[in-house]
Amino acid sequence: MKIVERILIKVIIIQFMFLFLAQLFLHQLDIFPQLEQLTKYEGVNENTFTEILQTFSD
Image 1 (cartoon, helix red, strand yellow):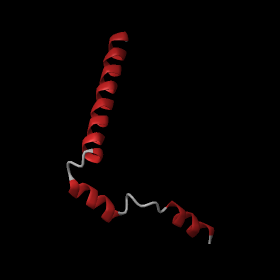
Image 2 (cartoon, one colour):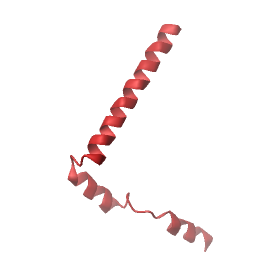
Image 3 (spheres, one colour):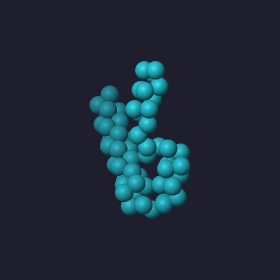
């Protein structure tokens, strides 16, 4: 079981590194400017949480 645990820990670390690098490339370095335009179009970057709360409180 120790071998399996070590392998799983290594896989988790590698997955975290790939996730971090992907976030860095896609969001910080602006490699795909179309992706930023798409997120603005879809409304992902906007903070609409207060509007949702106002809808529920009415």
